[in-house]
Image (cartoon, rainbow, N blue to C red; front, side, top):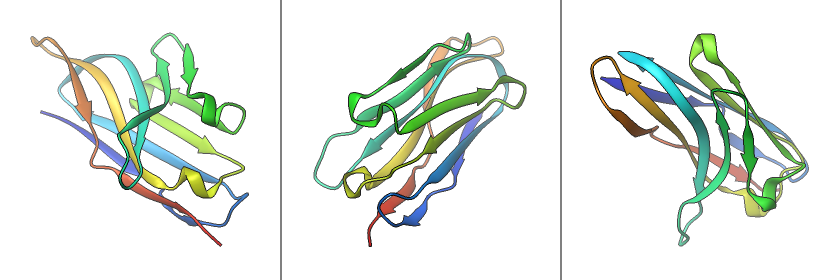
Length: 120
């Protein structure tokens, strides 16, 4: 069994900052990639940022220069530092990870989501 547990969401004013965390736990053999997606009301889920186990990062154009993704491989944890937040960043943020369990195949796992609301 593998679980992704997110934390750090909340309400923040425009221009403010939040830091999201996502910890993976369970019978994990290896993690290839971790990342964040978001889904706003009435919209499709979209990629925000990803980071590979080797440290390569990828960002959506809409968050480049404002968000920073990082990882702690020893803790199987990924972070998303969100600065200069805008109202259009309001969404449920989901953690995603590409994980191989012991004696199992590579598979995609999702967290339960954490709400981020940017409003004055």
